[in-house]
Amino acid sequence: MAYTSGQIAKMAGVNVETIRFYERKGLLVPAGRRPSGFRQFSTGAVVRIRFIKRAQELGFSLTEIQDLLSLSIDSDTVCADVRIRIDGKLQLIEEKVADLTRISSVLSGMLRTCEERGTTEDCPMLDALEDISDTSPFAEGGK
Image (cartoon, rainbow, N blue to C red; front, side, top):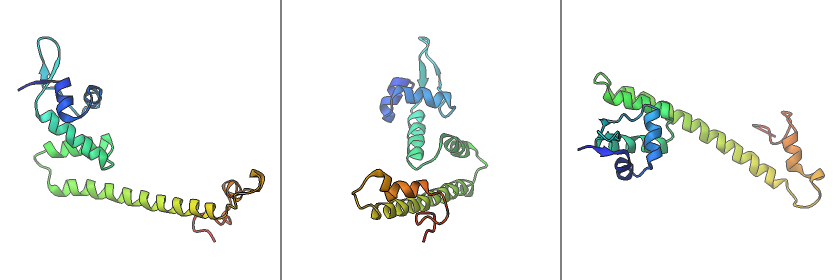
């Protein structure tokens, strides 16, 4: 059975603009056009849209999602090919988590220096932001 983009959007829980965007990016291809000119899609489009949305929730970019989708339709692809992509994404996420942990630590240190009084001229947090030297107590690996 063929569905319009509006019907597919409703079934997939997205809006019609999302469908159009995915089409422009080559992530979703309509099954054809009705005589009225409306694009038509199969129920497989709903599965693909849900795949795209779930992959986005897991941090994959549209380019990475396109790569995963192409792997899913290539009969020569083995699970190890997918594993390589997932492992690469996991490594990037772990690096980001480490960066965010470091940033959190630096900001916590800055907050501990604040006495909440005085003018901004004497604000140790602003001073720390201005101090670009490696000797700043807030520099990575600080003192």
